[in-house]
Structure formats: C-alpha cells, structure tokens
Length: 440
Image: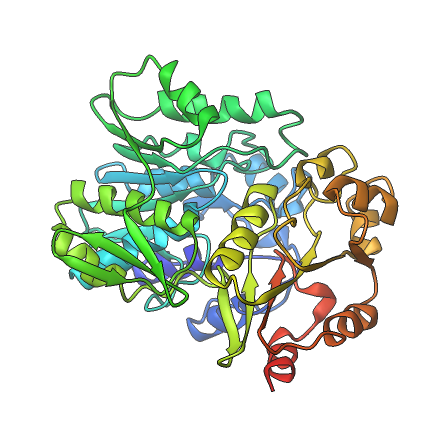
C-alpha cells in the first residue's frame, strides 16, 4: 500500500493515508515523500466528501471506522488491484501468476525492460535492485507489468487479486495448493486459476509451464479464445556452481541458481519477446539479474561456505529451493532451517503438504512461534505432528530463538551451506549478523 501511495504521489495526486502500525521500510519511505501520517490509528474525521477515492488494503477490516465513514458518505472505494486496473485500462496489461516464481519472473521482466530503456508501469511483490519502489503508475507508458497474486483483494472484495487485472498477456508458472485459510481445498484453489485463464482478453496469450500436470489439465479445459503457449526450462548446463544459458548467440552465465529459475528465465524470455525485446538483448540483461529481495539471497559467502536467505514458505517453494542448492553444491553439506509462519504452514491439515520437501538436506530444523499459532487462532501443533508431516524423524523442532541459534552454531561450516527459509523473521533474529558469524 505504501508503494502505491508513493506511485500516485509521483504521478501528481494528493495522497493521504491511515494505518494502526507502520513498519520499516514503509515508515522511512513514506516520511521521505512527505506521506507519513502525523499519528498512527484510525480517524473517521479524516474521511470527508472532498475525497475522490478511497483505496482499501487487506489490513483494514470491514468494521474499520474510516471505512464505515467512507461508506456512509458514498465515496468510491477501490481495492488495491481494482485501482491498479483502473489506472491501466488503456494499457497493454501483462500479468504473471502462479503458486511459485511469479515475483521472480515479474522482476526479471522489469529488469530486462529497464535494461532496454523501455517505459512501463509495474507492480511487484518484493524489492527489485534498480527500482526504488514496488509500484509505478504513469500516463506515458504503453504497458503495465503486474505480479498476479491469488489472495483476496480486500475486506469488501473477496475476489482473488489477479481476477481484476484482465490481462492481454499472461503467464502461469505452476499450481500448488496455498492460502488454505481462504481456499479450504485444492479444488477451490485450482478454480481460481481456471477463472483467471477465462478472464484473459480475447485474442490474448497465455504462457504456461508445461511440466505442471495440474496446470496443463486446466489449460486443456479452457474455452477462452486465446493463444496458449507451453514452455519448459531454458536449455542450459551447470558448471562450477552456476547455470549457463545455451543460446544461438553463445552461453550466458546466470547469477541465479536452480531449475525453477531456469523455468522462470524461459517464461520471462517469452513475455519479453512478445513485448518486442530481441533475444540477444534479453540474454545480456538477464545475465546481470541478481534476483528479487529474499529470493535465494546470499547473505555472506566464502570459498567453502555460503549462507542463503529465501522467502520460500509454501511446500513447492521449499522443495525447489532445497533441491536447487543440493544440485548446485553437491560436494557441500546442506543445513536447512525453515520457519513456519503463514496460516497454511501452521495448520494441522495443510502441514502434510510439506512431506519430503526437506529430504535433500543433510540436517534440517523447523522453527515456529507458538504465539503466532495462538494469534491465528489455530490448533496447537506438536513436535510429533511436524516430524510426521515432513516425514523426517530426525527433524529438529524449535520454538525458542536461543535454541535456534544454538542449533545453527553447533555445525562446522567448512564445505557446508546454510539455508534459512521464511516469510517472517525468525522471531526477530538478525540474520546478517548470524550469517557473518558463521562464515567467519
């Protein structure tokens, strides 16, 4: 939301906002642009008939006092994705969807288009090197690149966000059950992607990963009159801990690791090609792409040890990340710590989806905060529940940050890598300091 506020401010709009808590980096960014509210909290007196538009984020619930006042005044209320569509109705819209990889593919496309000096709007779900904000909206650009999240739009609009964009060009990277708090079974979750496919503009194009049988089945059943183009991972070779793209113009070394990223590269290339980016220009640009923030990010590294931080939390993401590091560093031991932080990952029913996701690790642990379970009003989970779900009797389960640090430091990290995976922050653990202490 704060990125959208900055984007609209940069476009020349008068923007105000409210929230009951503002964390970094939102706090500093809003302050920099003069958009930081004087006080945190909800103030119905701020809502007057002079306001043109109210944009409602997911944090504000339907009993929010400012929202109630806006409804009483019959103000126009948009959800975040609805407003993005409203701002880009006259542009070519490109939407990247999927249970995994959508942030990285969106960031890849942004990186390439910037390298080629193209003018474009965008919205992406993570910080990307070279871009100050995660949203840009202009009057000048002919195209908008959006990350298509399947989560709900707002307290008033229960549609998945990506159902509101109506893309001309779309990509789906794969489908694996997630967000069980709003999609209680896999069938309901898959249905959201089926509806997304049907909402692609007539004569538009859908690119989809051909290695996902669930996705292939959905595409085969679509009745939409669009071009449907399958793709697989980009031709490559792996040497000295790196991937090299094999192309007609030579080989290009990637900074990124993993077969999932080779799939992401191929998807991004196809989108960029349709946006009239020559392949040779794509390859030159993608070779310098460092990845979106917290996507297999290297915290510290030596010749014998690397500490990685990854946003992976859903089962498919966890498995892909662990497998990637074991494939690219077969001579090193892999020590893994995964924080269970999301509603789904802490649910007794859903947690079975993690079965065998950590099997490629040499030593693995799970960390979670019992207060998070309580806050999300979920049933308590035991160490036994977690070990059974992951299919690993020797899995270490911890709920205390001191125990977590002790477990991590008990290993010798010569010829070993450490992988930290979470959409949270491991109970406030300073992961940069931890990583530095390990490699030193």
